[in-house]
Image (cartoon, rainbow, N blue to C red; front, side, top):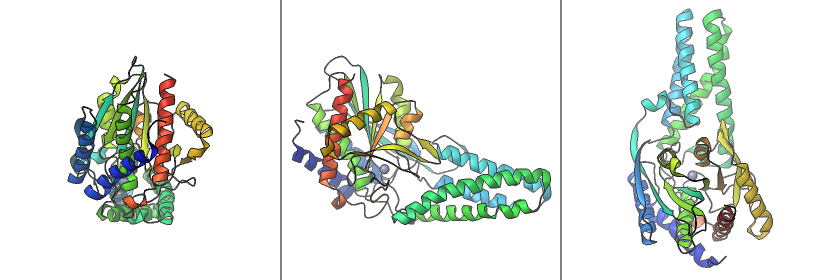
Length: 395
Ligand SMILES: [Zn+2]
């Protein structure tokens, strides 16, 4: 490793301060998110790159679709018993529409809910670095610019655990409502409506959770995810003077990750056909815990990293015990790795989870730059540098 370790740590921290303190909370599609994109653009330009800004339309809140789902399920519950088979059929249809749309939403797939929610404009910033020798593969490094709202569900580990359990309970009870109402169209059994009360209660809870979170202020987002932007920008600066042999690197800073990844999805749609033998490395919350790589993620719909890339990081962790890297996983959360996997690309996420799977200061007002541990982010950088070298050597 030729990079001077302490200088690297200082650069990483300086980027995090600029984003989380000077710009501050960076809500998706809001002016502060655009300022963060401009910061990334200016940094890459100053490093000698020719960065590009690409704009796209996005939802403005992750909560809007789920609030509509909850309302549709509640309306269905209320009208089911009013008029025999006819209202049973309407209620079953509405419930099915709501459930299927929400599952598609959780799977990042276009659905009827997206036709009615408010939209805004956001942007990605990207730059590429060509290899010195023959171009044999692409490595895409990703970190998101925006930050999330600090709803009560993120305020403590207990609330997060409740929310993660609730997503499963909600899914099961909503599915039961659909099945019960469909049976009710034919049988008109009286108990079916009472058996759907847990679903109605879940819908009220879901609506309340989303309504509260949607009104909460945005997080300063030092760990989530200025730490990742800092990682990508610092790697861009270092690699500019040490290009790889056969690997073209993409430095990608995305918008609207916190609203179902509209930025990453836009980037992949525009560029995936230009990739040569691509590999994707996503950074999430790398400033407080880790280095860690994800073995699994997802909300209801699970996503897993590419096993070949997992093998590489396991080998690095074994060869460099001093870096203290370990595997972890998250339930009830997603990274942009999911988008790369859905696009059929080999991908992995370096996600600074604790070994128990907790994400420090996740969507909290306490996610400030003073919480960043220079040792953790420094080791994550060193771990990543090893990963990039190995990927290039294997090409
Ligand atoms: Zn994040």
